[in-house]
Length: 130
Image 1 (tube, rainbow, N blue to C red):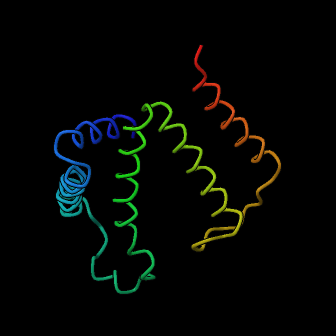
Image 2 (image 1 turned 135 degrees about the vertical axis):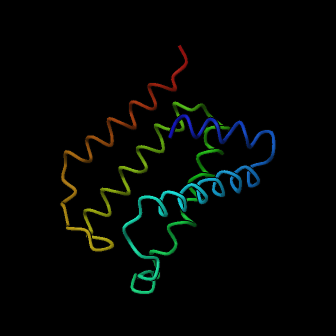
């Protein structure tokens, strides 16, 4: 993710944020189709039997790519990835805690709060100027 984020950000500086996102997502789409054709075991026809909410995964992919590029452009790759990882862990913990999208409920206990606080403290320490 770190390497891709920097590559996408540098591409975006030359051709534009959304233009680079379209290029990145387009090449990913082409290679994903190729991978599905070569190694795929599923069936696109089953898409009708999936919760329509899950169809928004591609849209989220676009939003994630754009926000990573913006974050890396405004901070540094290390800070951007640190913040992204903390946000990802927090959202994943909430998904677990509430059993969202059919996941098994896993309690959000004190150790998770302490872990997140330590990670946030680490990012703040990382950003300190010496």
